[in-house]
Length: 351
Ligand SMILES: [Fe+2]
Image 1 (cartoon, rainbow, N blue to C red):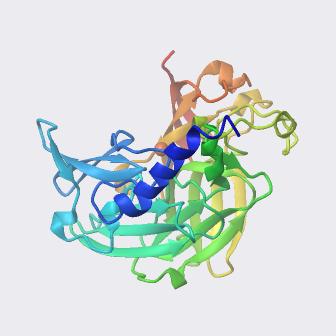
Image 2: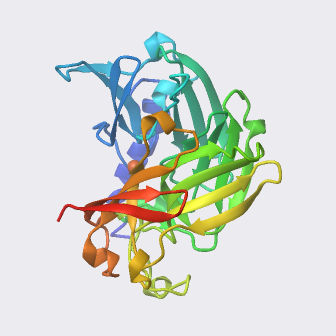
């Protein structure tokens, strides 16, 4: 109790500020774990603006070429429904044909926890927001996908445990017993009732490489993610107990590493019909490519794509060395993937 007491005032002050102090005002990140917005997670160019994004706060507009801060991105003044007081994913997607920007925000401390899909026109005006209750607990979200007709959400079991903050511990826990969910929403929909949630195996996908409507079957969506068997939250998760580290998945836990993965989702049946690891784990040295932070040609965002690029983890990580607890592994390679064959086409060694 002695150890907990000094933390309580901070925790409750932050909680109070988020709910009552900053609610409804601009630039009010909704998380209780961070209280300022450095907008340093990502950079998006859209409608003549550069947006500096950070998922625990809203996006800032920067002036070109000076990079002077212009203030919060306010959709040309058209924002409503509190969107600008949300946070904003660092991985907004721009549709190559319509020019729309689609992004997500989320809130883990309201009940029920929710996410919001936000669509911005090619001119930078707010077009649509859909607020959606999460299918599980208060989970951390990070990335999503779009197709030409749908938004593909992904909710993994990395859950906020607020009381952990009371003791000063990292506030997230990975739940090895919970499902991962994909959520499919038509991009024209205005209602959370239209979301179709699809249960998937226990895993976590921080990043989405791309997604698209299956040209062979309009009821199916193909999604390529960087799949992890679990996550330690990139330093935001509490250290797992030794017994958990001993392997709920029957393997030694290496830390936060990912492998490119193909999912095929049947939207009509609401089920996963394919889950394929495209590059095998380290035991199979010839295809042992752990990677993350992918990208496709921007002209193919949300469309069938043959190629993708990603950052490959350093050699020692590829060979199975553990990632130091609480840190992010080094990336030393750029990988080019052929998604049609599942093969790795090229490897650029950076170190
Ligand atoms: Fe990211």
